Length: 74
Image 1 (cartoon, rainbow, N blue to C red):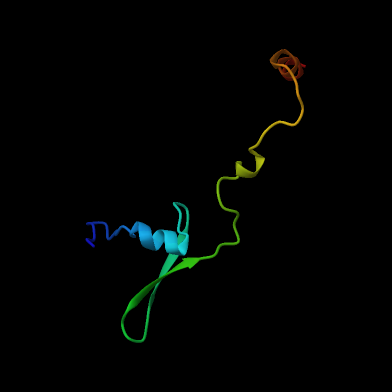
Image 2: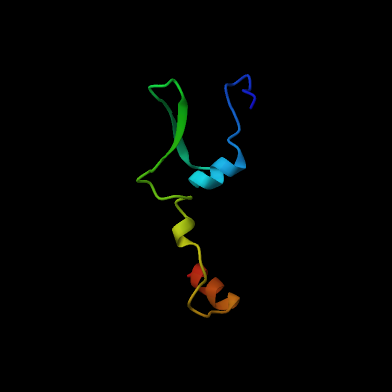
């Protein structure tokens, strides 16, 4: 594994899958007593995804485009 000039490394896909690390995941590096470095996923209290992700879905009210546009114009 190579370290970039910015100090970045790529976590191998197998490790990311094993720890369920996604694009927005927070991780921390822990140095053990044996001077080995361990990576740990940090569980966050924040909801994952964007603030709009919980609003995504399918509309349950069947309206035509004309009816929706009439509502937005009032």
